[in-house]
Length: 193
Image 1 (cartoon, rainbow, N blue to C red):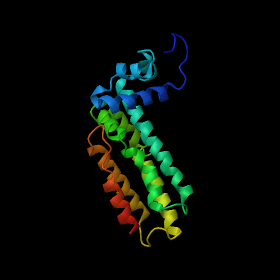
Image 2 (cartoon, rainbow, N blue to C red):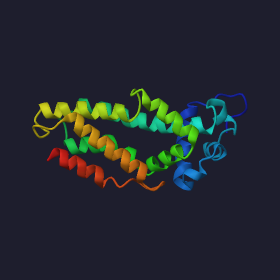
Image 3 (cartoon, rainbow, N blue to C red):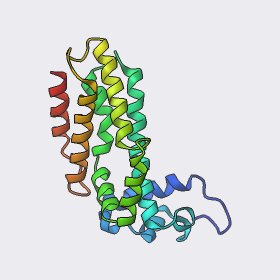
Image 4 (tube, one colour):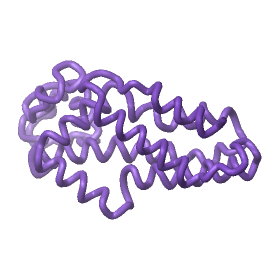
């Protein structure tokens, strides 16, 4: 625990990682500011000092994790022509459907303030699923040019199908369990022929 008045390095990372452990252990209902700060081993007021409350914290946690997937998806363009296309897609999207993904989505969507903040952040198209979709479309277009994706594939439509499927699985999986990623990989197989 940090003594009063001493800075805690990487507060966001510390609290976000602790929140994921709380969600894995106790589910979305167990995600309270006290549970997070206790898990992080820090002062009880640290979460509220850095976020406007639990709703803002939960929204930022979800957006941070989605931004991480977007960053992995954006890096796919550099992988064009390398490895297997299906494996590259799997690597970029798999963490979204992990055991904390559905639980974090449930935590955000069951808190009105969190849900609103997530929707507002994604509405611009500069964050979230729109970024992931754009990155997947660019990657698939590059693989199409290399002949590693079937001729006639529409990269935009394929990316939309992948993101839509991932979003559906994320939102319908039981909290605390990984989403049934088989549906997503079936869509990948369909796209790749």
